[in-house]
Image 1 (cartoon, rainbow, N blue to C red):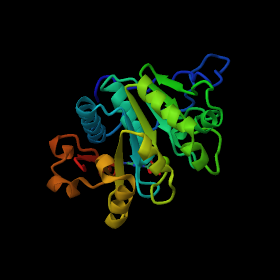
Image 2 (tube, rainbow, N blue to C red; image 1 turned 90 degrees about the horizontal axis):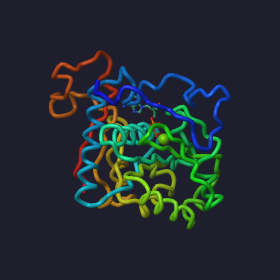
Image 3 (tube, helix red, strand yellow; image 1 turned 60 degrees about the vertical axis):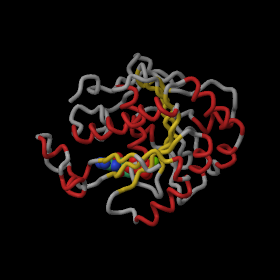
Length: 266
Ligand SMILES: Nc1ncnc2c1ncn2[C@@H]1O[C@H](COP(=O)(O)OP(=O)(O)O)[C@@H](O)[C@H]1O
Ligand SMILES: [Mg+2]
């Protein structure tokens, strides 16, 4: 396990009520699927570092600072990938990162990080100019959760408040990482695509039909896509099986838990 990736230091959210005993907002042990979990699969962690490195390079060359995580349908691994990417950029690359739950239909980042969701993006967009409802999860990672349920988020996401929010946070942070709803089901991701610098597509190996993934990529705009996370792939499907598992990191029953990063879709 790499130094600096051992713990997720959950601090009190700026706008979240602090328990009277001063305890952290963290109620349960961190999720095992997060790269900061002490027992995280090293190969899994390594793939997120590769993704972080690719984005770091894209920032150096093209000035990219805001990125959305998208996929065709649900349960492909967008929320997990967005959260792990935000963690790796903030921890391994020591950047100031804002993770935004842009899935206002089914917000899930707060569940994964086990932080409160009493106020979040939907509330901010309803009340432009109010204080940024950011949870300081670590010294370098802030999180804006989805907020109160919004049955029809298009009005909010298409409005000036969303435009202003994304423009301002892009200036204020080194990276803004936005989790989004499925491209093929809702127009929300398209609205984010028009206002963010780049997109990382997540494709769930073996379940998402390639025409569906291709259609989703076209809907986002292929030129916006930095690369693809092939999630839940078998190592034997990738490069003839010469994954990290071949070099002494193999763990039992971990094979379907990998995410593989491929850049250069554009
Ligand atoms: N590589 C992976 N290994 C283990 N569990 C995963 C992996 N990718 C996703 N999951 C799990 O699958 C479920 C769906 O993932 P999620 O990130 O919520 O998908 P989406 O945001 O695309 O709907 C979650 O329970 C998530 O933790
Ligand atoms: Mg999700």
